[in-house]
Length: 71
Image 1 (cartoon, rainbow, N blue to C red):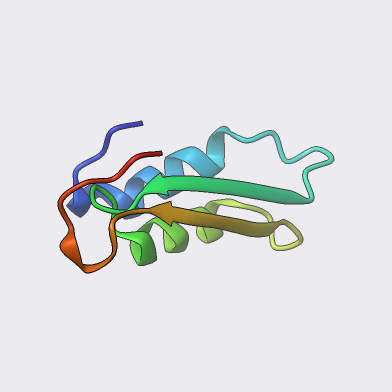
Image 2 (spheres, helix red, strand yellow):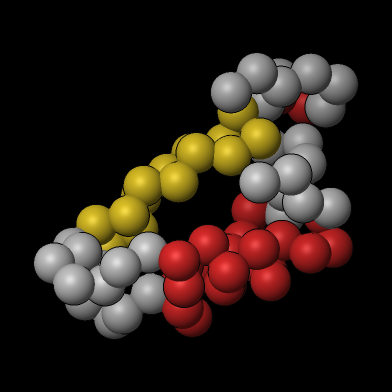
């Protein structure tokens, strides 16, 4: 899912709502750290996932250079 930074929250909500909550106990998200606002993505995911579902993940990036990312 390629999403502009400003739409990260809505992308998180959409992604979380696509997951079948039946039997779901953990969600793992890996994202490009340059194209996504990580805080907003997590907020959207947490809002759309059931409270009992854990969320784990990580961002790919090049540290403070903010030029390249490979996921």
